[in-house]
Image 1 (cartoon, rainbow, N blue to C red):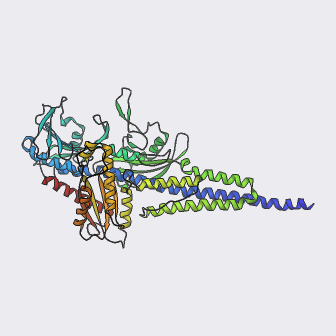
Image 2: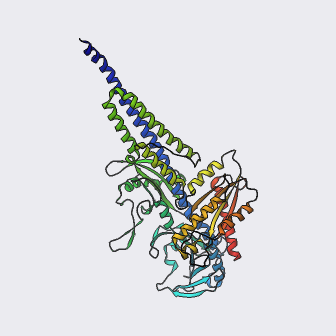
Image 3: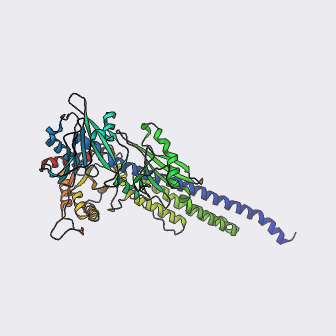
Length: 568
């Protein structure tokens, strides 16, 4: 055997060992990277599902208080509403002042077939809908202010009998607060749900039903803003399988006759939505006590491709029963990792002599960056909000990191105003109420006169007003304070070391009431302004739980708002 042959015979086993080691390293890199990215994606998906659940609960939670304000427990109605029209108008005005968006319409029907309703048309305007006899058609009146004189504007052509309506029958038979199924309001072409409550006479007998409509338009807009990737989907579905909201499509479609129909999720043309729904539909059959827990499962679409799914069932004491879902194809999540692994494999096969160094270098880069992403999400889950995800690499893993960074920004930033959103506030409250934290005060701010401004100058100016108010509030805070927009025209400020909450409230009111400067559709000579109702809650004196603290501040704000409405 010559020297050359001896060298080859000695080198081949080592080359084979190096190649095998390289393949193992590439495989380990793929396994570690895919597992870490999968865990990271699951946590982010769960955060988005939690955010949807919070948005739903925030959207509907005021409806019960609205009904209670319209017909307080222990206040029996007269058999003939004609004798208490003034009292009902005052109560219904206050009720519709509490949660104007979305609860701007409250109505009542009784066993005599009479009906009374009040729909707000702005801060100082409303429409009364009244019928005092079962056989007459409803009359519509305009009023200006809580004590304004009614002016007849029209009479309804179709005969309206509250006793035949589903909301009336459901509440009458249930004996407690109840929701109707979601339905189409053909006047506004929006999806709407109605909450209804039976009203009892002085002797405890059933007398009638009070109800309020909740438009789901803003909830649909919120879901449409969620960033879940190019092929990912976020949606809400009710127990009957019909779509409530979706990140990419409307909950309505045109039927063969042109009529608007609800979209059925099981029959949807989207394979990802169908697969995700099939995997979470059994949650509807679980005990209500298990609702609220976020589940993560893996589904398969019609072609057998894996889809990662996170879901949360949302229920309340009035029978609301929806599921919030986020679904993302596994291939979308691992696209960057798979591409990187194939590159590494090609390099290792072409250059066996360098494969160990290349493999180790590649594994180190992928592992380091994925570890950085995982660490960021872990810090977010512990309550941190301002967590940078800064990876500058320009390959597929860098692209993946930038996608996660965008998801992180979308998760914690209000897209309209650029300040923190409700999810960010939840995390800040979690961190701020940890053992050993400094005391702080929570201020719940609801803008007055926003709906009339929106109606008068248009939605674009309404958005400009919200952005201007957000900037003003942020500019008025100290470095340790924080402001968040909950949605609509509601903001929350977390301020530490506040000794006189009344002075802070006065400062916020002054900041908000200053004339708006960024609106573009205000006629010359007019000045656009907003007001505010503000409630405060102190931690830990008023509540120690973050949700209870926010609820305390919310209720304090509405007490102030109702007192202001009564004063006017």
